[in-house]
Length: 219
Image: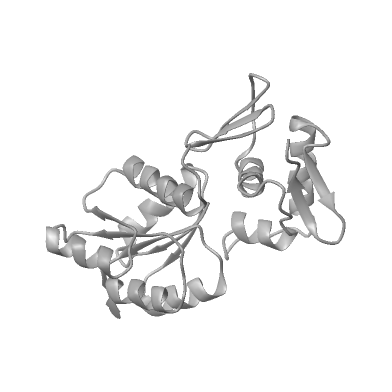
């Protein structure tokens, strides 16, 4: 998943970056409402983590503005304000979930997975396509009962494709989903990941639609 973290506390921001990256996610970091609005308008995110107290305004105002603009990305509000009325206000202004500080990083990651799962219309925590079973929480991939080892990038590409089986995903969409804005992307990076996935999952599992992109064959 690609996640935008909006947090002005440097220690917490870097901790979220490190922890979510270890979970296999791509993380972009901003400190202000202004930068968050610009990022959300420029990139497609799977989820946002938003602090309430930001230098240039309230994170709740940011959430409300994003919803008014038509942005439907799942948003988890992260704050030290944990009174019931604070949670109610956050949810009523457009947040999908609310987590108080201090928090457990594992719980945060699990909540984000649940939000994204529901946003994609799925109820199960795993994805099964023919003989392939993928557990997103643990990044475990099983093919005909045998575990397949994938690199972080390989799994990220596979995750993007299996969320939409049968649909063509362009190379630029894959790049945007798996690389942060400060990362350099080689001109054939996606093709290399696709080639490696085919070697591990079968040559026919991922289909190239020439001039358009890639799709996972529906089994």
